[in-house]
Length: 269
Image 1 (tube, rainbow, N blue to C red):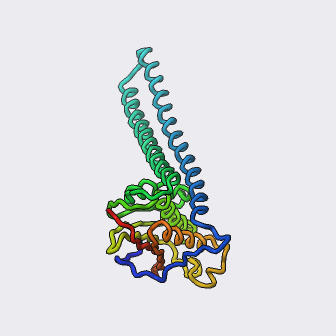
Image 2: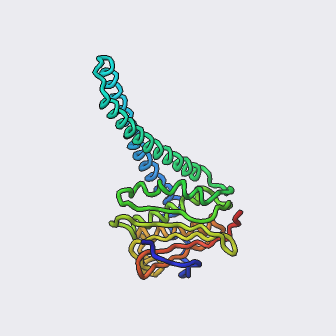
Image 3: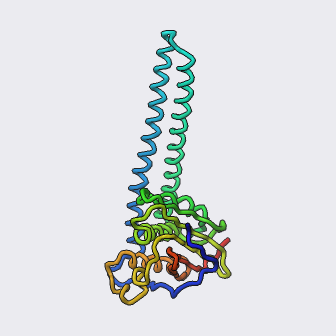
């Protein structure tokens, strides 16, 4: 169950945004993440299409058998009943898998839009995040995790690529750090209008990360090879650059889980 919390979230000290030389930056992290997502999405689409083709082949084979029985005048009521049953099962299999493949393709197009466009444009955040959320879990699909996006529909002047990279980065940190080795993790993102702009709050129910894990302590900052700390710093830099100087905040729950919050001065319509 998702760790309960109330809005507005009390924020910890802002995470550091400067990126020391040699650290993983937001663009490099996004390119790396995008490559993994494209590969995982292509693999999943192929699996879905393969299942749909199998369903269609099964249906055609049964139709051939039915035609043979009809031609030899050996067709029975039981044959027709079985055909109806197989047709319903095959049709459901085909539709389910084609619908899933179509949804993945839509999400991939949304990611492609994000990677191709770096300039700010009016982006409907809720629809964008909901379109890409299923794709973001594909590299860790065997974990059974979920991402649910809540909030208000709004248009904001932010680059699609930056929005995609932000949510992808948060999901990756959750899956590779706090939810690593666990099953059925829950991640939720809330999009809200704030007094001066918008607030994005991402919460997950994995293990509570430490300040050293996140990189807010001197010890954490000195561990330049720690992937979680470097990715958090990259996201902090991304928030500051693309979300109108926004600061990324983090809070660990004593009951388990972590909350990241971005308060941005972006104008929402």
